Image (cartoon, rainbow, N blue to C red; front, side, top):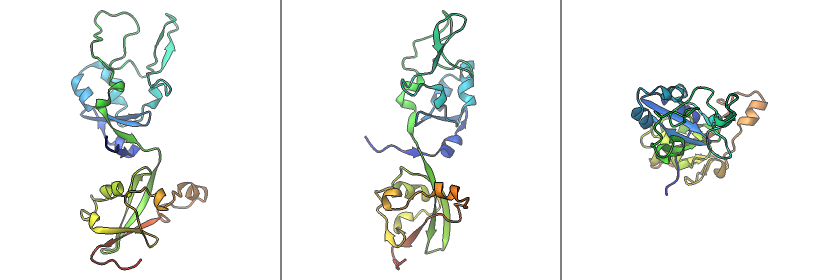
Length: 215
């Protein structure tokens, strides 16, 4: 099994329509677009569509990883808690002969919708291309290795793999994270000091492999 892909909340948030619908919950990211296609037109899709691109962890019991429940004040029965309305694969509160329960595994337990892991902490870094003097600030996941960060940066420089990546004059280990490479996350310190973190971001310098001058 390969290494999971990490996503920032911002990346999840852009998938916010019925035709392209992602959500996150309990630390994982799910693509529910196929679910929306399967149940297109069903009124029970409404709460899911309204939550497109958002984190819906509050729908779930973190211990059981199942939908939260509560006691129905009218019947005294324990039923799923759906403050935004009942949704796909949630049974009706009362017996209903029209409800089809032959769908198999409910969508929140179906790993087929899983696309990756939601980052517990994102951070911004500045990448400076010493060949062109261009710099770019990008948001990355703190769990990502430098190779995975390089993949994010390819949209700005398709030849990023042809560069040596350095921080503070040291070559970076591309199989390690920023933190493991000695690049601390200083967001909290910036916040406490009311400093503009974009101005004081740690800078990673890229040196084209045909011109490896010392930093």
